[in-house]
Amino acid sequence: MALAIVMAVMDGTIAGAALPTIARTLNVPPATAIWATNAYQLAVTVSLLPLAALGEIVTYRRIYLAGLVVFTLSSLACSMAHSFETLVIARAMQGFGAAGLMSINSALVRFIQPRARLGRGLGFNAMVVSTAAASGPTVAGLILSVADWPWIFAVNVPFGIAALLLGWRNLPESPRAGERFDVLSAFLSASTFGLLILGLDGVAHGQSAVTVGAQWLGAAIAGAWLVRRQIGRRRPLLPVDLLAIPIFALSIATSICSFMAQMLAFASLPFLLQTGFGFSAIQSGLLTTPWFLATAACAPIGGRLVERIPAGLLGGIGLAAMSTGLGLLAFLPEHPQPFDIVWRMALCGAGFGLFQTPNNRTLVGAAPPDRAGGASGMLSTARLLGQTMGAALVGLVLSWMPGMPVGGPTTALTIGACLAALGACVSLLRLRA
Image (cartoon, rainbow, N blue to C red):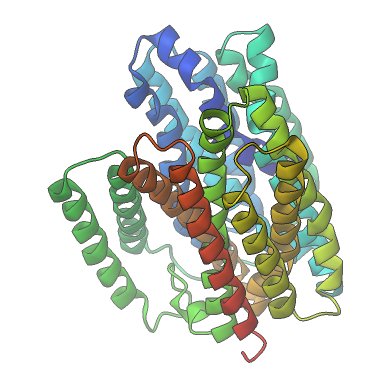
């Protein structure tokens, strides 16, 4: 499971580092090249909830193994693409395969781990995910230093085969739900989240208000129809039954706030460090590394602490620390030294790591065992929605404040600090729930 989820998460970030090379090699403008990343993220987001629901029907094992097969074959197709259109199609297929892994990843952890050790299992899982997300650009840089861009995708093939063989031998069968798959609800879910994300991406890239408004109107109509269709169902594809559980709903809201804050930082810090303070790209990457190292170190600690301390309190403390770190980054001195940046990054990462595992443990554990697939799908959906909205906010801030290499990014960091503080307050509400 760790090997498979590393590939799925890393491929969400690894292609971004290769976009300039891909654009130059395939002769496409940078604004078009971004679809090599967008196609992957969009495919993952629209298919998470349908695949989570399908996993409860046909077992998590089958969805996971099918996702591995699709992901590995489409990685091979990406490496063999000779046109940009072919690459985008292969990346979209790769996203569908990754969604098969992400959608029921936490549900499988819950199914495998004894309940008393669920926090530790999710803590290890959070550490793996955080490390994979952080190492994507670094791995891409290493590969591009010795090989052409197709090898960024080709390296997945042997690891995918190894994960498939291990999974075929070791992954357990989960109970099946005796229901049919709701195709119409799957279509409505994909339409809702797909149009919502396209609208957010359009706002970030300056599309016309009419186009963005039409996309959001379509998302609202499809979403309302989806919610109305799900009410009263025993196993709804959109887990409205789980959202009716107060602590589950609060955990989802906390997760969205935290990932919005995280993406506001990740998308704005390169501009602040490189354009605003004059650090090189390599120096900027090194200065950001303490965030990921602190998250990887604190995630397992949070998994152990949640067995004795309420998750609402741990999440509140963690997000308060993250909010403090983001605020301090927003008010760096005019000519900061590397140490000024490093310890602030570490504070943000430690706070996020302390929050993430207890939150995931509470969210997945709040669902009945037979609805773990729906809970896992909502967990991944909340993460992607938060990241997408955070990236769109950064685009808006930087477009509203052009020519301000320090003012724009620091404004985005301030908004991130406020969102992390809001997430801390929502987390503390779980003490009452």
